[in-house]
Image (cartoon, each protein chain N blue to C red):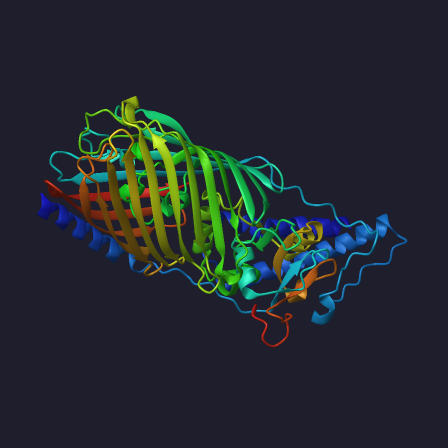
Length: 429
Length: 164
């Protein structure tokens, strides 16, 4: 018995646990065969030890049959006997699990006057070409089989090189079924597909930056990207259509810098409570396809002045993603209706991004984005009309580090067009 | 400035292409015994479709029809069962699988990625212990205490079984 355990310990030293440190390396066929043979031996010895232990502890019980049952028998094998006590349930993994995302970006631009917004860590008025951007700590903790906590804390680089801490997401999640999943806390709103999938992890997205319309509002984006409240989502019984819903109710808190006037004060929208409703389908016949839309509404009082504005955002998306191919399309209509004057300002916007993985680690991509805001808009006068293409290449060094190189050309109404070059190392840890 | 910017972009892009072209990712390779889908004997499921199997192992379907939460157990890298999961069920490489689960967890759609186990014995123990468990295991390693479910109406070892 002790000898068997000794052999087990010895073999465990050569088990794949040891190989987990180097699993990115590709072992040759001989090594794989050896590993499998050793594992087989370990399994057999484990079974023998278990059988011996069972025999020692319960000598009156008959030994377990060792023969492998035929397939037809297996379907019924091991059916629990009434009153029999099975093995204890495994404890779920407790504790906080951390994951991090970071990036270093180089940006060169010929915009005149300078138009470096607050995205990627570049602050208005900054003359430097390098920025660290957001350092993102993502944490999850499972409280029970159906309850968990999700947190995302972001450290954002500021003008002086100091970092500001921001709790981007903090959610208590309860999932009683696939048809009802509830979250309470601070979340990214379902005003766009991009906002609910990529969050602050630049490593996750193909492009070096977010399209302007879906950029975070504190980086100059147009949508109310965050709220505190409750979110409910789930499937709707619809067979192979895969219809899903999402409902959100909460308080958005949008503060947006002006992207063309670095010295101007940020606009605090003073949002009232928001409500978002969305429907999307993920059909069985084409895994990776996601088509849907959402509607958002709240009332805002920018900078607490005399304007009270009803803000509505209608969005639609058609997305097809596989591990090697990505085709993102989203369109928006942002409406601001001023109560005092009765004026209505519509801001249409869209972006499209297509990318294809080549040669394993290379992923060229192309993006086109468009935003058309009125110059009289109470919120987006600085944005005005701007559109243009972006082309780039992403190279994944390994499962953790990616290099991106991107060229942007932006055409603006009433201003000269300009070009940006972005070089970025994005990583997770 | 514009011409210089564009020229630098093209130059760096070309360099990246030249440096990176030899890097090829090894596709998942399967080849071995049929891989059975096993669940806890208390799970009433008898048959499962390929589409449902993909939804389960991609975290899209998180509960069984009787309401039990699904517990996913997979083999760690470099195991035949892992290759079959990646190649036949999810159609991904190892790297793509890792990135896929990072995105799923990060988006908040799932609580955690499937637990990766280092042996079929560990998978058997996990499935025996967890009522909502599901795992893939080579047919010759199936022992009592778990239930093998049909995939698309076929049992492992029979013609038309998809997880070969």
